Image 1 (cartoon, rainbow, N blue to C red):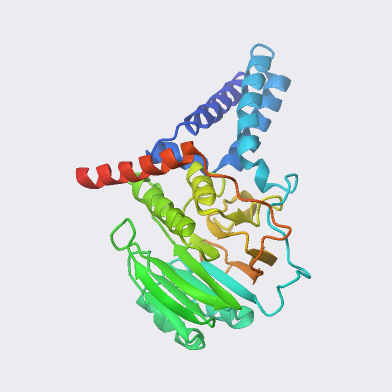
Image 2: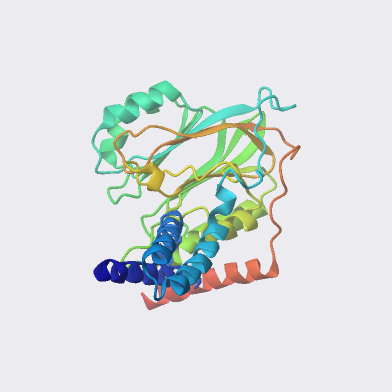
Length: 353
């Protein structure tokens, strides 16, 4: 029993510690990774609090109280991505003005080392999206999906064998399509103007994640630059991709506010896409943000096709007016300061390199 109580105390202490670390807006990878498992940490805190009250007569109440405070913070961060919260993006079942301006989007990080090409090919054949974004695509993936990609008259392809290759294929008319390197070498992003009834911009991102030896300056800078571009255009914007960042992180929320985006997941669920084998314990790394000119007919995470990510699919309607959508959160002076700091940190990190 003593050993069990000791283990519960250690567990509670570690969970409280990593909750505290997540409060710091640092670029260090060993701090930023605690943005990701907030749901799992919340569940662990609730379990540790319950076991402490039940078994630890000596320190149980104090430990449970500290766990409750930490759990409250974790719940506050993930609450918008639960069905208890109010939705901010309307579903367009019979949206006035949506007729003839709707299209489908399929986004998937294929996992470069995954060589089960036929499962992804069958998924594309079945869904037949109007916009297809594939990430981690090397030359092997580009060659294996030649038949599927040939159905799309407009394509932007950068197959790279470093897990950051990208392919964007679309049936929608395209102009000003280009592949850029915003922040990190050999880490492309895609930018294009498409037309579905009227013109809109699409931004596709796949920045590098926080891992040992790799902090988040470049990732955060890429996300911030993309947000500023969205804010500067007069067109509606669709931002998609594997951001290697969870929806509730400070960086993703800053991107959302600066870009003037809405998120269909708010008030509906996390729509976790990684890791594919355990979606109930997973994180929402694959995103679809839209400006208020869009409505969403549906949004779904699809079946496992052999990658470590699950595909995400949506049908969007470009209505040209906010209608019943919520209003994007305003950009504060603090947000503008944060963007400047993100870009400054990135420039300093590049100089140090």
